[in-house]
Image (cartoon, rainbow, N blue to C red):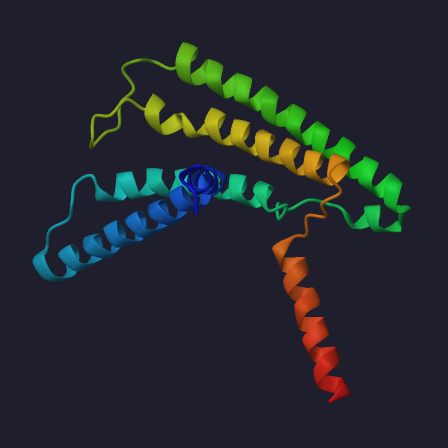
Length: 183
């Protein structure tokens, strides 16, 4: 694999890698907290607060990953009754409305974090300015918008059918059941 291809693969999956790292870190941190409390009657003063911030970042980046995989929760049942082209256009319009909301929220959260947030708001135990923790809001909603637009580009212009992983797994189970029934 060439270096360019490896870098592109890493960038394409950066949110997933960051989510995995956050999940591992906050689980290890909370596990350490439990062990320290139970066996040594001590706890890391900043442990639970930092674990909470990591969990929040994990949740928002998880939403970005879900948007990337087209696995985000949405009401799309009614689109099944439409002809394929109407379904595709309706989903694209719904996604554009979603992107519009996301971009408005990016603007609001950016304004809050960089213009309205009190510079003296700091994390109680770490002393880190809160704007670094709140920065996930504009970042996540911007990344989510980029992923949604990219999926629409692939679907509408490249003809790629992006299937929700759960729907794909259900289809695999149905095929396996049908194959088992035949034999």
